[in-house]
Length: 277
Ligand SMILES: [Fe+2]
Image (cartoon, rainbow, N blue to C red; front, side):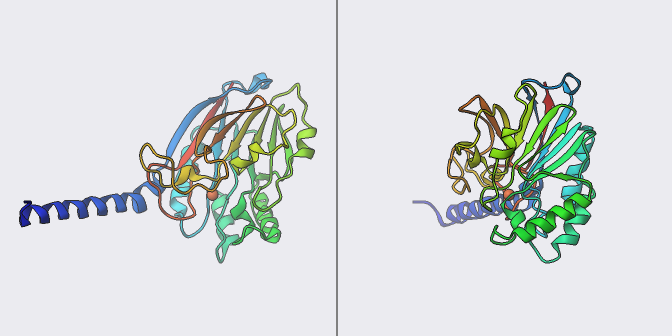
């Protein structure tokens, strides 16, 4: 039989381990950024962009739940890479009182790409129920007044590279057909789409190439070797990282910079530095 003293020691160790994991999950990992570096091969990439950096940020969730210092420090680290292009794939904020001034203040620090700094919208950018287009319209005004281009089912030509920015799925503003139809197939293109489930919709026509996404936060809390128990996507394969898709398309899902709830375990926040080729 286990002695009383041994039992208390084991109990103490378990409690200590639990407290340690809790501290790590709530206080350490949510703002322990990983800078991920990867190649991004694009068919038809303009020669002048070969070897240049495209920085991908997602899910900033500017709000009282994500510290401004952490976001600004993240922006500084990304700016050090001197990116040619910066893209932000949605969930710029979580709605909160005073969000306009707050977003305006933080957005001043967003790293600028030499050629382009582009944002698209996510579900949280549409207000508390993800359904208020007036919130999104005001947010777009705020972000644009910071000098950031916001694409809503539109295309931006970055020295020959076509960057398609799609609007959000859950807010029911995802409408890619028009802009995808305008692409010049002989030139390179990438697409930005907040919600990974959009890649499974029959709307992509003959678009080929990369789709950069966010939304999942990598599951936020992921048991080792197991899928995350909570994942806000229909296709539960879409956790984080690279996916080969039908139709000669590829997707990269960023784990995102911020969070909607201040917990992360085994899904560190991410800023991605792609080298274009
Ligand atoms: Fe998000």
